[in-house]
Image 1 (tube, helix red, strand yellow):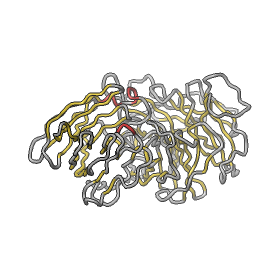
Image 2 (image 1 turned 180 degrees about the vertical axis):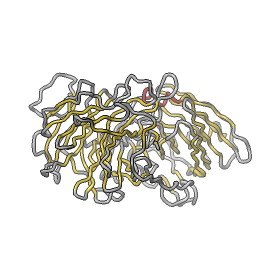
Image 3 (image 1 turned 90 degrees about the vertical axis):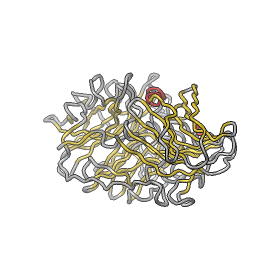
Image 4 (image 1 turned 135 degrees about the vertical axis):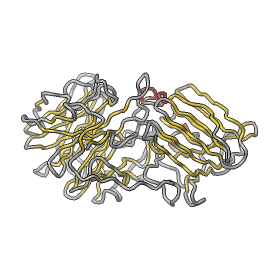
Length: 514
């Protein structure tokens, strides 16, 4: 029996994993979205279900300087003496911190801020009770005073810390600079078979990404490089999976080892990956010299033999996401949400969005709720009940990469007429296609996603869908749009500088994978 990669599809990068008994838990980066750091649960390493977020309150996650692809970078999840720790970086304000809890699906603590700078922090709990903080450091960041390095240097720095206060007990110092690939980052320190193993990502989070390892008799080095570094990379290979990096190791109950990592699935010509970086799984064997051999001789494939664990699929989720009184765990906003901008109780069975004065492209503060697109091929539909009274009022559905790259199918008013429009924003280029005049009342908005194209249509009650236009998918990919995130499917309502006369009600949302 085999499993198929990716194990968590869609925009779920920088995975970090722990095992507690027979349960596996995993977190991923969330960047500019709120709530932050989604948490997943599995019993077999293959089937995963979301169980919450680590950062659910403004006291834990603020965005003083909200920007696309800012916010939360590369969390690390660890479990020690009955407590879960999640350590990460808020690059939009505050720096490195950790939160903790004894109930991973419950509330987490307020942040414990850390003295050590850089990004991608990781905690290591040693056998003697010492706690080490390891992070990536680059020239121009806050750095240890005694370190003087050439321009452009990156390396892995480390200190011993006090877990209660977050204060450094030793001065942070650079311990390893990797094997020569640019941007050594995403460090994780382990103690395996009496040796300290330091695993990092190198090469930048693009096609040259790779995972490398070194080991030592002490947590400070000196470090011996693995003779077959990189231990995992598909760079320069004929593979649809590329940009493999930010790995984390876990040992199962039977003593076997596995690695989770990020990667992208390439589509089209030129090849891009607009779903963003996803979570993949690879088997790990330890050779006679004590080094890991990952995947198929250091490469990751679509299919590998399943872990020797009982299969544990999860029940199917509720089909109607607006049937209850609370939004599902898949929904996020851009930055901290404004109070009461959405409701599921005002009209049972519908999501009400209270329009924002801010335009959709403002980012934080926009009336916007979204979820990750998880398949390159899918059909999306939602029924919108919205009666704009003024010219700039609008509501609709968007395929969203960032404020400068998105496709919006919307209902608005133009020259006194209620209209369906397709708006495409690609950098500083704006294309607006008029669909047709709409009668009053609900209208169904439809998106057909293919690996290289999005097609947009509207459907009136009792009639066939009418196509409004299409958009090229690669223009929403990070390779074109920039940044670190993947495609989101969002619902929005905006007055574009004015108050919106009435709410927008969305119902009947369906996402059908192909």
